[in-house]
Image (cartoon, rainbow, N blue to C red):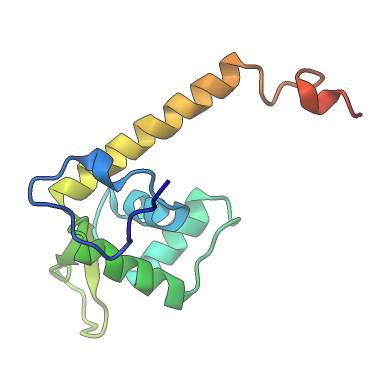
Length: 133
């Protein structure tokens, strides 16, 4: 199976499914930006909050991923909020396409979780994983 290039631009009017599956960091970035625009450090803090501290991306990996999301049209730079005094902070927000991709990926993951539950994955004492205990 050929993997799509992260830096390629989708065709104009591309459906959200063209972007799926999303790697975990871009997914977390879209989640962090979904309620409101944030600056980079705010995105890092929100990701840590959403993942219970299990994931806190480095600034290098965060900004590389955000740059790719901008290139692909999923996020864009947003105006600084009223009252923001720092001119160094750049704020980002989801685009309409970014919202649709986040929704599509969330539905895809929810479908996988549902399949897993139907198959009994994660149930103590069931499935092949329990045999070796």
